[in-house]
Image 1 (cartoon, rainbow, N blue to C red):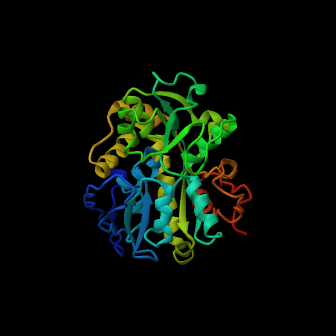
Image 2: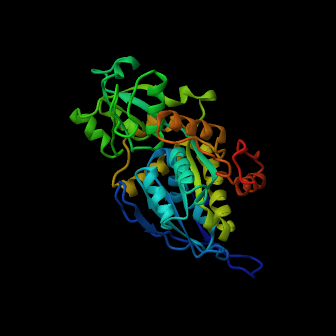
Image 3: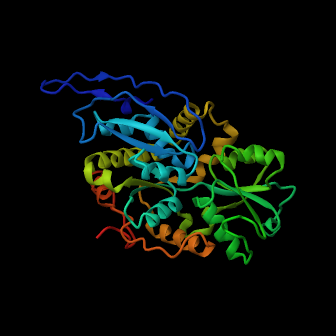
Length: 370
C-alpha cells in the first residue's frame, strides 16, 4: 500500500501533530458469486466520525469496478470517511445489488447502467440516485474461433451474457436486433441463443463447449481469451468517441438525504482513486489484482490482466447521455417499456467535489433532480 494513502490518526489540539500509522484489518477471503460477501474493516479514525457510524458499499469483483477495488485496497475511500467505518459487500451482477439496495443491505453501490435504470423505473423513481461515474469500456464479445470467424457466424450459436437484464445482456440483445435477427428477450431463444451465465462460470462453460462465446466485461473476457477464445468485437467501437458508461455510483435516496456528508466523502474517495489510477496505471493494476485475490482466492494471471486493463477508462463523468442510449436499447430489446429517467441523477455532490479538486463539472443530460 503506498504510504501516501495509509490512514493516519491526527491528534487534535497539539501544535505539532504526531502522525501514527494505522494498520487496516486484513480482508477475509470471500466467495465470488451472486451471494454477497461481507467484510468490515477496522475504523480508521482520522478526524471525527461523519454523520453515520458506517457506510455499506457494494461492488463487483470485476476490473470494470477497479475504482472500488483500488479505493478499498489502498484505503483511499476509508481515509476520506475518517471515523466512519467502510463495510463492503460484493456481487456477481447488477440485479442482485439492486435487491440489496432495496432491502437496505447496502447504502452505496458501484453498478452498471441497466440495473440502475431498472431499479429506478421499478421503484417509480423512489429508491436510488446516480451520483457519479466510475468507468467506461472494458466489454468485449469473445468467441470460439473454430466455430465463429465473422460476426455473421454468430447466427445459430450460443453466446453467454452475465445475467438476464444486466448491462451486457441489454447491449448484446440490442446488437442482435440491429442486425435484423430475432431473439426472445425473456427466454434468450431465437436466431442466436443468449445463455445467461455467471461470470465465474463462463470460462468452464466455454471449455466444456456449452457456449460458443460471450459478451462480457473484464476480466471475464480475457479469461476466455486465455482459454483459446478470440476477441471478435470491442463494444467501445459501437459508441461515439468510444465512450460509454459501464460503471456508475448509486446511492439510496434515504441515505443521500440523511447522510450527504458520507456520500460526498465516498465520492471524494472515488475521484481521488481515479486520479491515482490514471497517474499510476501499473501500480493501480497490481492493487486491483491484489484486491481480486483477496475476494476470489487468487490473483489474475498476467495473460488475463495485462490485455484487460488497458481497455477500461476510469472516469468521474457518469456519461449521462450514454445512459439514456442504453435505456433506449433496453426498450428496443423488449426488456423495458419506455422509461422516464428524469431525476435519476443528482450530481451536485460530485460537482462540489470536482470543483474542490480543480476539475471541470459534469452534466446530467437533462436527467437530474429538479
